[in-house]
Amino acid sequence: PFLKPTDYVKYTEAAWATDEFGYNCVETGFYSEGPVVADTLWALALIWLVTTVMVFLGTKTLKWSVYATLPLPYFVLVIIFIRAITLKGAGIGIKYYLQPDWNRLFQDHLDPNTGEVTGWIEVWISAASHVFFTFGLGESILITLGSYNPAHFPVPANAMVIMFVNTGTEFFAGFCVFAILGYLAESKGSEIHEVVTAGPSLIFESIPEALCLVPAPAVVNALLFLMILLLGITSLTAMAEVSISIVRDQAQELMDAGSAHARRILSRSWIIPVLVCLAQFVLGLVFCRRSGNLWIDLVDGGISKFLL
Image (cartoon, rainbow, N blue to C red; front, side, top):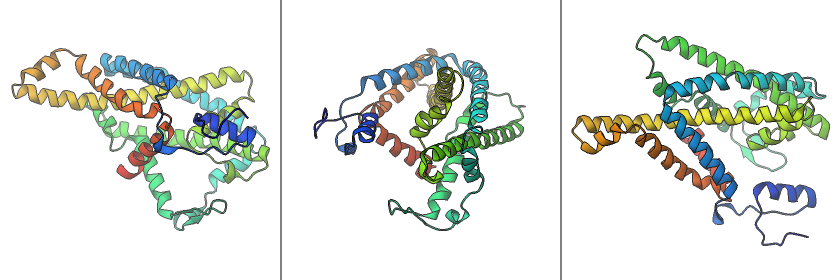
């Protein structure tokens, strides 16, 4: 009764109105971008301000930030794991996690509810894109950060450590996630595949719902989102460092060729980090509009799958 047929609502409000009152909310897509959402804009500005300060201070600051953020994810994961495996229905989710459908690897899949057909090659593309993204392959992050190490640094040994630690962490986190999904399936009386979600709904709805069942849920959920924030800032700083290193190297080549402008830019260490971060902040404004979630899906799919 409080919404008109032509009213615009936020993505989260649309989901709430649909669930609570049965509204038929239609996604406007890219045809109605709408104004920039102020809350999202200020959050983006704050994140890039912190990132600019970190990259300006250099890789030593990034190293200490990693030391501070590294123990927190494992601490939160252990809490989630302990609580998740004690939930009713956790065994269903873990069984679903450890017993994959091998036919999906070589045969197309038909969704009985929507009638949508998913090609078997999509499974392989998703798996490959995940491996590329999680290791930063094709993004020059590890190469850029590794270039600051001394020449005698044991690069192959460290690469193996990164591979095994990252894979082991993801495998362990899978138990946490699927135990929670098994609990949700049991509580809702649904099949496990009906509650399997990905993206924002998993981290912002499913996991917090399970963490509300632990002692001091507000503290645990606060740690969860603090962990996500710190991991996101650390990853963003590493990505920004790649762009800054590229611009700095190009300016160095121009200075060696006798460019006075490049010499002036390099003489002030703050110029390149500020300009690069400002440019990326401006590009991020597209995600601050009403269709931001669609842009995220488009960029994520285009970069993580098609380009990689």
